[in-house]
Image 1 (tube, helix red, strand yellow):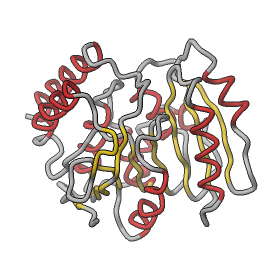
Image 2: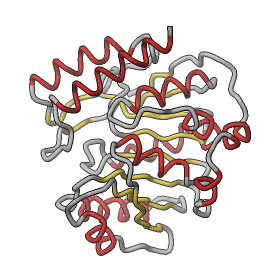
Image 3: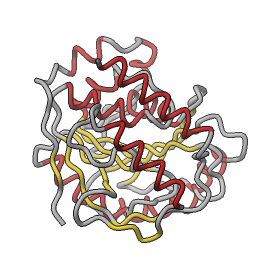
Image 4: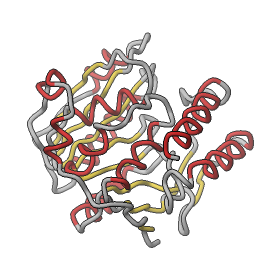
Length: 267
């Protein structure tokens, strides 16, 4: 299974210039760097987050990198933060922290996690572990080999669906991909919840992102390309996990509206 690489759209701007755009208060709440930092955005995930953390720590503890998992509690009304702290048993090689994000939306939670990181390699995956943890190894390898962004993809050669989405979700996803082609040319799957980056490029891109909902990924990848970043898509065996916080009508309509707004601003 070979990765798919998209072509950068422009020359990259400097990371210091991007950091200069960030609010001083946000730049001040930074974590010490580790080799790899994993952001897990979480909204009402108390049921499955503890097992996700146990599996993630076990996997990362066997890898050669010093890692950190950062759970970003996105205003949950259940026991997400408390359960995460109980389940978050760190090791000598894997640190685990829980932070909050009062601004609603998965994009807002991911943005907070990324902005407060100083690690050279960083990114996020969803709490449902729909993308196998084993994808992290080729992801780190690709980033160290020159990729600026590595994303899991369900729509490139070699990818498969272990448990497919419902027909309505698949149909909506097909239309969504058609709408995003102009915004992120060459990228087949903007919405798979597994994306990692080199810090230099993501700090440049994230400073310009304004979308906070599920269309956040589209705008983020568009800014990565505009900053000159090379995006690699890795084919994965993806599983549609039950219990998603994505609501097809509420979040789907909001995502389509956000993409139309992004298309309008790009013209």
